[in-house]
Structure formats: structure tokens, C-alpha cells
Image 1 (spheres, rainbow, N blue to C red):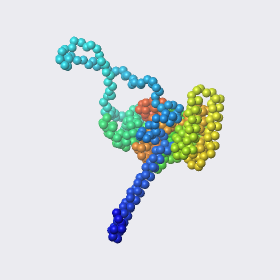
Image 2 (tube, rainbow, N blue to C red; image 1 turned 90 degrees about the vertical axis):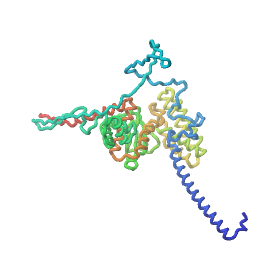
Image 3 (tube, rainbow, N blue to C red; image 1 turned 135 degrees about the vertical axis):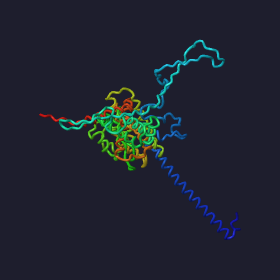
Image 4 (cartoon, helix red, strand yellow; image 1 turned 60 degrees about the vertical axis):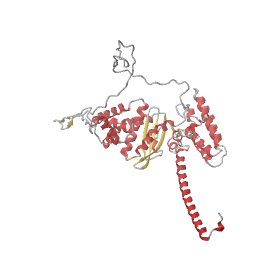
Length: 471
């Protein structure tokens, strides 16, 4: 186009058109910038060293799990991924039949020829559950008495008649399991009772039944806490949860046989001090959160966290690659060495050698940036990275606590927020009971019924007035 041949009006029109187009492009560019910023924010949430691999590796084509380099697939729990080669298949155990039914045929379905006798049996086991039963409704006519001697009024009790509410222990147990095992809303729990058993109750009634289960199991919750207080090693971790829309935290304290959850509005060292006691003498396995060294000096910092962080730093800054490689090699070497049955003396020597390796690592001159920050974290935890080398019962990672938090995290996505202190009470109690019972191989449904019955008996025993001595 020859701009010299255009008139002044044509040039002005073309200029206005170009200016309008430029404004449109600038608006689109601004929208794209906002979208890029939003996506980068979401990416940082899932691709940072503090995000567990289970959340970061989503199974996409670019996921690290699709890489062929076996050296990059290092477990931080001391094991190797997948089943071992030659592992025998596992089959479901065969149940013993409760009834045998003879299935016979009189004649050939093709030609109608009559069969004389069977030539063999082809057994097939079929497992079926009975149809849901309707509710059993019992009226307990509790007789009232008054003592002629002291005037005390007494109402007779029955072991199957609760002192409050109109629902029995089976309803209480199933309400709690439906909420915390099946993750159903209380409205759906009420629907389930009506569909399966013809039992009509509201969502509020399902909530009250779950609350009764929590109150019944609170004594056992406190027993779990006392058991954890007496252990030598405990895994601790915490994650956010909402309480009436405000920030709170759910803590987990996990041992080999017990798990306890505590919902608190604090993320400070006062929470482990409250749960474990300020004089707790065991080893705490944890991440790098400042609340833990403020609570105890006897720590084991999680190697899974520091290795993930080192790997992330190596991708951001070239100077971080040799540091990540050194850390990873040291960890693998320690794990390999500890597979043999070392004496306490050899463990102590190995611990001293490993500490010197870490000290030489943090003394490297590096430029400011992520690498310097990483080395600062390693140096700040020098007294806590190698506790597992000297103490055989201590794990080098905090995977146990992170695994224990998975169920509360899933529930957090479903329920959104706990509404009040009662909700916090129920949440931490029922979660703790179910997790501990599973660790111990106990049936949660049977245990919920047990604690509900026991609670009724204890409540009645406490309600009986003591007889004063006449002496």
C-alpha cells in the first residue's frame, strides 16, 4: 500500500482503525497475563519442594513418574517401589459355605434325552449378604421407685436402653462410620437409614448420633494420648483446616500402634506441649516447622522434605545440582549401611562420619539465592538430620504422619469447615479412634458399639449416689 496516495481523511481513518486494533490486542494481552499469573500460582502450589510426590505427580505425560531413569526413582522410606520380582500372587481366601444346594438337571437341553445320573459336580461358591432388616422398636417401661427410708427417687435401667435419645448403639455406630468412613453428608446418612432399614431420622439426628459416639469414645481418646505420651518415638505433622471459616490446624501424633488427632487454633509449640506433655522425653520425627525445635531438642528432621527441596533448588540454580547429588548419595549410603545389624558403637561412628559430610557440604561457597537458603536449612538442622543413624527405632522420614493426614485432608475437601467447638471435638475424637483401631487390627464398627455401651454403664455408675458411712 502506498501511503502517499491516501488522502488526509483516509490516513486519519486508517490511523483510528490501527489504534482500535492496538487497544484490542492490549486488552487480550492483559487477559493472557492475568491467566498466566493464575496458572503459575496454581503450579507453585503443586510443584514445590514441600508438596508430597503423591500430589505433585498427577500421572500426566510430563510427570516425573514417567521417566525411564531408575536412578531418579529413589524411595525415602528405605524401600524400593513396587513388588519384588517373583512375588507370589495373592488370592482372596475361600469362605466355608453355610449351606449347600444341589443343582440338578433331568434332561438334555438340546435333544431332551433323559439323564440317568450325574457324572460329577462343578461347585461354585456364591457370597451374598442378607437383605437389610427393618428397625427393631422396643418400648422400655422404666419403673420409678421412691425409697421410704431416705426419699431417694430411682428410675430402673436396662443395658440396652440409653439414658438419652431414642436410638441404640447400632444407629450411633453406623452414623459415625457413615460420616467418617464413607464420608457422607448427614442428610445422606439419614437417607441411607431410610432406604436400607426404613428408619426415619433427620440429618440433625444423624449429627447428634455421631456426637454421642464421640462423647462415648472420649475416654478412649484420652487413653490413646496417654499411650503416645509414653512412647519413645512419635511422628508429628499438621495441616490447615477451617473453624467457622477461620484458620485452624489439625495435628496428628502417630506411633506404631496409635494415632491421635488434635484440632487447634494454634500452629505453635504449645500444641505438642499440651498433647504430649512438656516433659516428653521421646524422639519427635517432624518436618522443618519451627514449632518442633521450640518444643524439643530430640528431633529427627524428615529427609523426604529436604531431598525434595534440594531437587527443586537444583532445577532453579546450577550450583544446587552437586549439593542435591551429595545429599542423595549420603542418604542412600546411610540406608544401605544400616541394613546390616550394626552395633551401637558402629552406629555412633557412622553418625559422626555422616555429620562431617554434612558439615563439609554446608561450608561450600555458593552465591546468594535458593542454594544458600537450602544450605542454611541443612546447617540449622545439623543436630537433627542423623538421629535415625544412632537410634534404630527412629525413621529418617515423616511419611507415617503424612500418611495419617491423608484422611483428614480428604474430609477437609468435603466438609469445608468445622462450625464450632463441638464440631472440632467430634472431628478429632472419631478420627483418632478409627485410625488407632485400624492400626491395631480391630473392627471399627464393633469398637464403636463397645464404647457406646461402656459409656452408658459408666454414666450410670457415676450417677449412683455414694452411701455415706455411719461411723
